[in-house]
Image (cartoon, rainbow, N blue to C red; front, side, top):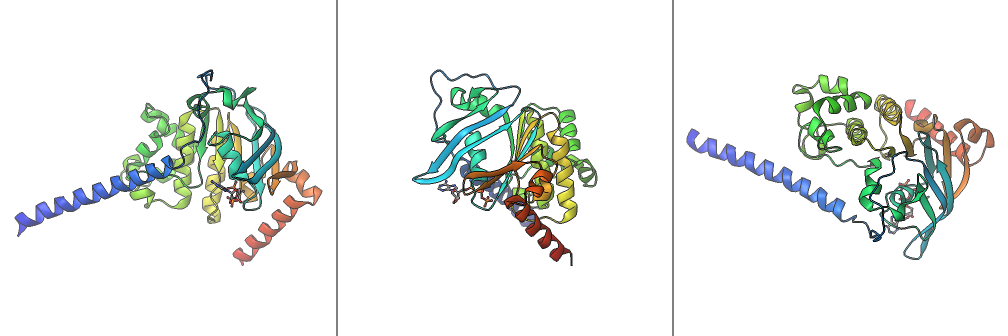
Length: 297
Ligand code: ATP
């Protein structure tokens, strides 16, 4: 019986490994389904922007015939943090997709360090941007290997520094195998907030001048939210950052907040100046505040 048990046990192990690998491949196909619809120009520069000053200049964009962004203009000076907020469907994530050049703008231009992103190779452009997506892809590997994915040649020391900036060190220390602990299929063994901090560490490790954070819509408890806020604040140091925010508490400290409604910028300013304007931002802020108070009751 024992002789039979060992091979069956082994087969079970092989099955789980293959299933895990297939889940990862599946995710890779999800990513590849988003294959960019743009091509490099023959004259495109392979040099990545190194400073990271972003400019949206009268950018308009449509999906099929549907107008999504209308003459959107804003600047993100090097080293500053800009947040984009607005109702669901306002076009916030589209701004990130255009910056990453998954699609080309229909009119206007996006520049980084004064260079139109259409004049860069896609590789050069994407090297200059690290993104923390809404839904992080984690592989069934250790936490450290998942972070290393941001820069495959990173040393363990680099990875540890990134985990510190992402406020993950204490959590990792509490695990039985520390950084070598496996995260489970698609990161199932991690909470939503921990997954996002792994994504922040991965993005920091990439060492790109621009950091983009597409905040997940799912709500987190206030401790997890605070941990992410701290991670983001430290990760953003020395970077130009663009944050698409759903929870306005995340972006109180932004240098500039851009408020989108139906694809148009309707307001912009700091948190306090926007509250004083008593417009859309102020209404969104009060609605979220009331919701939070109700949840706390
Ligand atoms: P949310 O806060 O809900 O994430 P958002 O402000 O980020 O919304 P976007 O994802 O930018 O909104 O979408 C803007 C509009 O574009 C939406 O109406 C959406 O349905 C539409 N849209 C997004 N992606 C596509 C696509 N690939 N093809 C067609 N329409 C799309």
